[in-house]
Length: 480
Figure 1 (tube, rainbow, N blue to C red):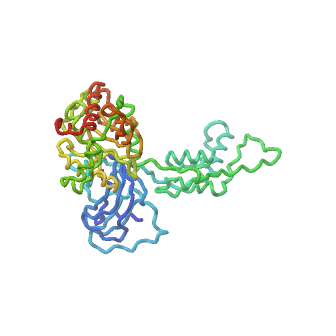
Figure 2 (cartoon, rainbow, N blue to C red; figure 1 turned 90 degrees about the vertical axis):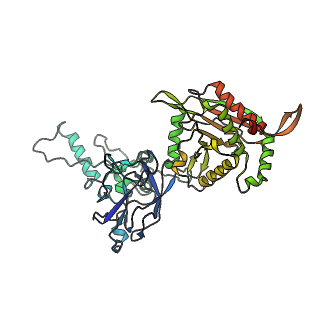
Figure 3 (cartoon, rainbow, N blue to C red; figure 1 turned 60 degrees about the vertical axis):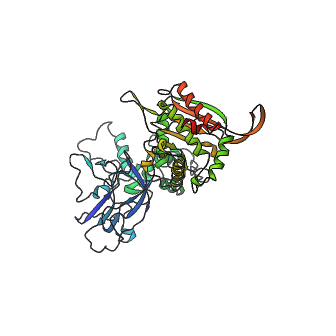
């Protein structure tokens, strides 16, 4: 792929599709070189640390070049596609053998994209812009020096006069540049006994990939230079066994995108906010009966009605009765920020990892409106279409571990929030009801909270209110 630099070619850069994001992975291209595109047409789908997002092109033209293949993680601000906006016909694509896998990022700068006035940030499609930067990948620097030649230079240095070469000596050849590879790939090569300098890289910009290391293991290894200080053995040493890697015994999954962001957020939350978790087991038989009644109510026709709906409403009522629990800790200002609105987060397991979209201003919604919002949230998450904006600004969260048959758990706070409610499985259990042991629908709730701003009394009141409403759902009317 050849990067164009004519004035008629516009370079579309990876935008910041969410506040503060620095990179995104290209999941799928919807266009190819030679295709005609129009303003607003989606050209690719990318995955950020928060969600999968479709990117529209902001002008008309003909695709001249795709700078990165699918599966590549690209820094925000790096050009990813070149479009000829002159209206001329697209050139014939070069043969595959003549096209490099990735165009050098340095050559993919826009010919006419001015910076925003009064700002050091370049304008992008969405978000707040990004600092001018280039991709992390470094280009190869000149021809490589063979391993044997570099080894000879080092050996001459060691066997010489113990210092720098004399003026009469010819200059020693430069030592081979350090191979380009990511830390996990370097560790894999070390574990398998593979010398990275002997591998021919196939990744973008000469980066050695995990597949390159495995391929090097599969083929016979080149003999390493002998160390002069070690005498030859009396008898021929047995040939070293070739290290084998049985890929059927292990599967390695790169940590990136949503999973990477979730891991970092959970570690930060666990070791920043002092967590306290309280539990209560409650009879929810009446709540389950109300769920069945609402399913038959015409006002809820076509809406998703389940126990989570009434649990969500119970938590909203409990927050209204105990507003100080709906807060956050501002470390920089050393202040507790009490929120007068509730953006209710719902933890959702998706193929890309755990995400927590939230229902904006959930406190102001009626029960049917809340049911509609929950249905939309779940459907969007399952389709992998949750937007970054839907996952920002949450104040409290509910995680329903009961759908997996789990009784309860000790949930970790979503960063920036003060409380999270875990809902366990609802099971038929023996329970003392009106002085007699009867089978009742029972569940266990667990509330984790930030003990810097929620003390034991406040946390207990919130959890007790939720339990009381689920035990006697008519309190939704009297307390709301």
